Length: 294
Image (cartoon, rainbow, N blue to C red; front, side):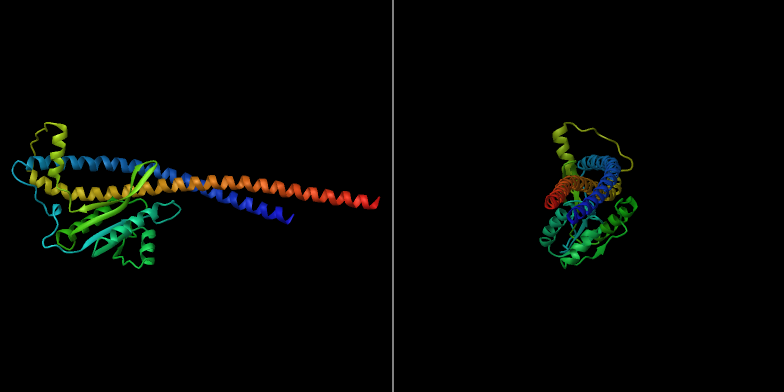
């Protein structure tokens, strides 16, 4: 009977794990739905900002090329780059952090002189273990990033870039592509891609463009909108990273719940076999004892 007691204890332990993982799956599902809605709304705003910038650039193209400090690398070159890695604060989310940090290490090894900044305890712990110095750990940015925090971060990056301290600013995050696909990406936040090229591509594919009258002048508007473009792009990176994290955790917890259910069934079969074996042994001993007395 000692064997059946052990198996019974294991069944109870696996049942407790199954309840925990199912609860975590439900929490991750609720958070994923909320963050997906938020990211979709922010994406529409970011896309519209890009369209307005392209329209402004198209109007400026008639008088000259677009010129702004955020559109070109500093001269002379600083010889240094800034990299921001957005990871999660918690684990139990499958290969989310592993894939992201693998991509980050490849980028860091080929980037030359860098200043590395991280978001999330997983990236901080990983780079500490790998003896990669981290200049800043943004612990104040939580699983639900606020625009005000991201805005301050973007402003510091723009200031460092325009002052000539960095040749480029890159963000490494996990992009949400679909429900079945999330992939690590490297986004060049600064310098921005010149919007004239985008406007030309749109004009070539869409035909004649609508002519707008702008007030104030396009140059002034563009000077206001380009920093907003940087801020919204960075905020979108945070949103997509959070959506991908919650989706990865939801999938991982579902797999763990299913595995716990299968293990319970297997243990119950072992328990029934062990109990039947014990009963058979006891019956055999009773029969043998009765036969010895007769």
